[in-house]
Length: 329
Length: 291
Image (cartoon, rainbow over all chains, first blue to last red; front, side):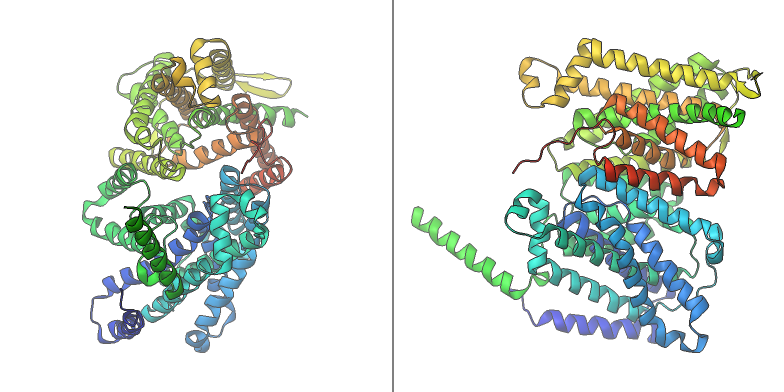
């Protein structure tokens, strides 16, 4: 039995640590940067896992959502908000960026009512290219040159708070009634429709929530990198997020966290190999897929991410099964 | 009028290259229901093989084309054997992710070997004629004729030969066909060989038309060819040809009448509109879903 009081304690400890690290300079700034990237990548992979893992679609356009969030937030902080308020307004900016991206998420959610699978994958790729093309063509936001000089507002505590919030919201969503609907769409859409799951509503919610957090991640990312251009959010960025999700394992929040962490850390650890790094990384991925096609976690979950009620039901089910096995033998 | 004719010719040239690449996607999809996302990068490798043959071996055009097609075809077969075959029973997404991984591997490997963009030597004497104000270069004609010839050959192979019949049978029903004595693995390898060598042919011709090549050239063109395959109805060979020409025509026409930066925007918006009205592509048939 996992000690359930341990999780809140760890969360608070992590929160305090996220303040302590930059103030006391516990680790050098390079490691702090990597920690922030890990947090942002966790947000991205967890939110993509909602659509690709739990709902069983194949969305390739996550970098497009990220771009929308990044642009909204960057425009707000560089143009609209006065400099002396920046620090206080930053959480609101991130929230607005997420909300704007969620609205854009409708663009992808509505075609998903009619098409599935490979065709929906095309819709998301097309969305990604359209977003990139639109940003490249609007001169007012820098066109292909992008937005330089974004203030560095993303701090370790903010990254930590948003990461925990993302994981918390998505975990609660997955274990809610709607989440059951999402899972049933993955298993069989027609059957779940017949079982009176409102598939349209569920799909809409899943896409909008996923887009929201992609926008949040984009906003945080823009304020770490301090420079964004349409080229930052290309198909390669989308592929990176996909790799994190499938490396960790679909349909598992713990998997997404592990996948994002391992991917980010591995990229940094392999940096001394220089150009050979990107030759080695995909090879690791290919062999992982051959020997463990479901990813590291693959539909399994750490106990901490399962709500107590579900854990209890699962244990009772297991006891019943063991009892019936014992009776049979 | 001459302007439109001129642009139509350019559209045919670009469209035939898209169509050749799209064929590789659609053949593999038809037989394995798997999207081979490494295909765009195999197109890129085809262009590099063309560079190698033309620069180091000083081959003329036809041997270069054959060298590139054979080399990339064998590479495609090897990739299928090593990376995709163990995953035939695995969930579909694992195969897709593996394909993405193979694609990134090919890009990075090429980047390690050739870190700078290369200039492919011109292999054919380029002659241009002007007929009624329309400028036609010999290269354009060769690209179009060669592509259409390869497509007709492929259509013949798929529809009229034993191998083609086996391919169609496997895509029809994977469970029964091996029981009838069809060597499934051999046919799949053959499909990969044909599909990737068509991609290599496209790469060779592309590098003749646009001679500066780099390891990332395959990404965008690969995705666009994939889109052509879907527009035509993925898994359908004639659909892929039609889709390629449609995408080529849309892109060139947009670039001809509007600022060229709008090209991607309009091409992909049209794609979305098309998918809205025909969700399974032009020639694709919806598979009935059952519970």
